Image 1 (cartoon, rainbow, N blue to C red):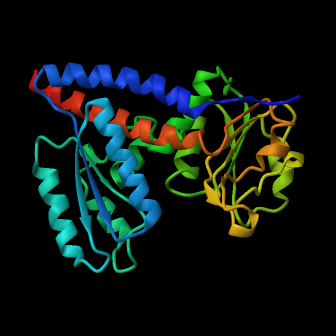
Image 2: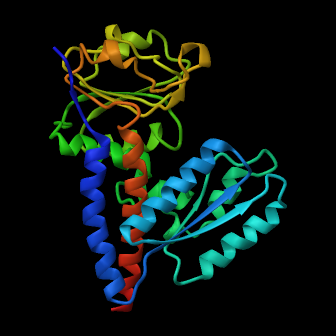
Image 3: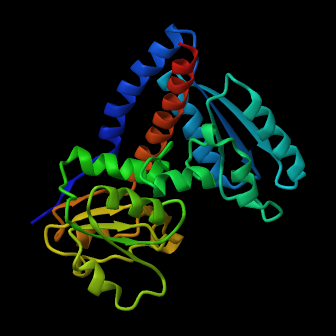
Amino acid sequence: MTAAIIDGNALSAEIRAKLAERAATLNANGVSPCLAVILVGEDPASAVYVRNKVAACEKAGVRSLRDVYAADVDPAVVFARIAALNADPTVHGILVQLPLPKNFDSNAVLEAIAPAKDVDGFHAENVGALMQGNPRFIPCTPYGVMEMLKSRNVNLKGAEVVIVGRSNIVGKPMAMLLLAQSATVTICHSQSRDLAFHTRRADVLVAAVGRAKMITGDMIKPGATVIDVGINRLPAEQGGKLCGDVDFESAKEVAGLITPVPGGVGPMTITMLLANTIESAERVAGEKA
């Protein structure tokens, strides 16, 4: 058996076409959806992510603002910019690209963003709303994963789901979303004993730990749906290519459905950022009506 591929690029294109229609409607009604992105430092990966987000905005008809600061910038400058963006009624989403330099308190920066413009869904108020089952914004990567599962009609009710990784960005919010769909959720992490024991029980396995090819085919239940959130670059001596947390070649021979890296969850993350920004603009438009 060879697993069917959940193509994140194709699904993203489909969703973005619908988002572009919603953005066009907003623009026609005098509300121009706008995402402001702040990048601090010169991390190459972060620069690429920001560039991709801005490009996606332009294609979808979403206005974008980009502020780039040197790594040694005074944090007060960034906080002042966030405050200005919070107060600007024409800005509907604010995103600070992580990770931040060591001289920044990342939690303080995220908490400085107005909850109503926190399109990443990281503000404590939005995290609490998600926990209560009434999210204002769903964190983009878990949101994308849920859309991928939905696109393939994966039955989550009563399903055994194992998440490998407990980050605030993916693992924890992913668990909340799956619980809301009546899945039985297990979160594994670096201190979990006998990881393979847990992963082999999973009807749906979500790998989000940041370790290249950590999940191998013999750790997967036959026919399972495998979602690979990880993105890692192999060493030069191994070809230097991008790969996920799942060993794709061995996993595809066991799984029923699987996401590739690249071309899987990655494109969906940016797509759901657009979705959150447009939804924020629609709320503003509704308030003006």
